[in-house]
Image (cartoon, rainbow, N blue to C red; front, side, top):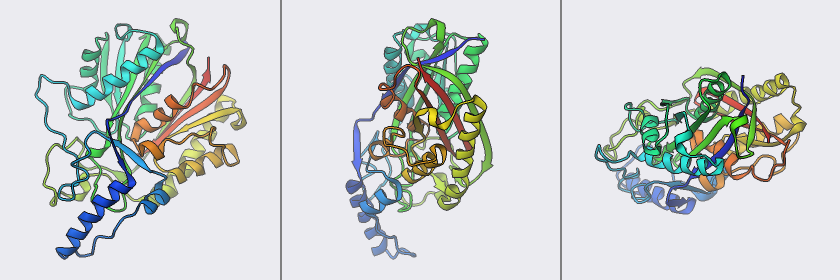
Length: 365
């Protein structure tokens, strides 16, 4: 059995930002138009204060801004690409992979496996991962996987297990998330939640690694079926009628039920993982949590540590990126891990639809 290290991470940030004020202005213009047409029940206004209070989100990055902020449209314009052009997810993913490879100090040709782990894939086949593998020029094999918001942690365990077993030496887990294509921007209760991004991490046999990075001490995964967070469409929709879609084809959640059921599930999962690994909560220098909602993260942090976490112990990126599904915890890890010293421990944890929860216990090399 081989030890495994995460030696590089990378984040692709889309070119366009939407602030809460911009989003609210577009949504309220849409609401006014619908109400003038006699909407029953009337469409309530949104506000920047409501969004921040409900989520902790202040901004989001998106691949298309104009379509989302057009009150007559309210969804992104993501045109079809010709078959001989890279897909949008692959383009985003390759950028994140290049950044992660640079941090790891290795070339794409040294990578044996590419796992594209994301909530929504642009197409069913051929696999986005195989396209990314081809664009990178890496060797071996590639495949897609989907465990919703936990896709990244599930991908990390999958890659780490293959490296431990000796079937491969190196892998990239890449998480391109075009959440804007699945969000119902016309629904006040959720129109602010998601943004777009792509992340990637490089995993290697520890004895082959050149960069220090983090040793993967242990991983733990769990699933429990629930329909309280769902998307009944399944693929990135390219064209649709702006007013007549089935609502359940976009992101849908029963927010109160999710809070009530997911928070104890995640807190217990982390506590059990730490106990089985022989690690005390007080030994953790950092929690890189899934970035869905600030109140959820604050609750989990208090339950795990037994006190209110200091900002540096549980970094949030929600205010800048919004919820980016599987990529959120990896953004937090990529942007808030360089300051840790050798021997410091941290834990990546993601959770979401499924329900699914995955945790990765790390020690700085």
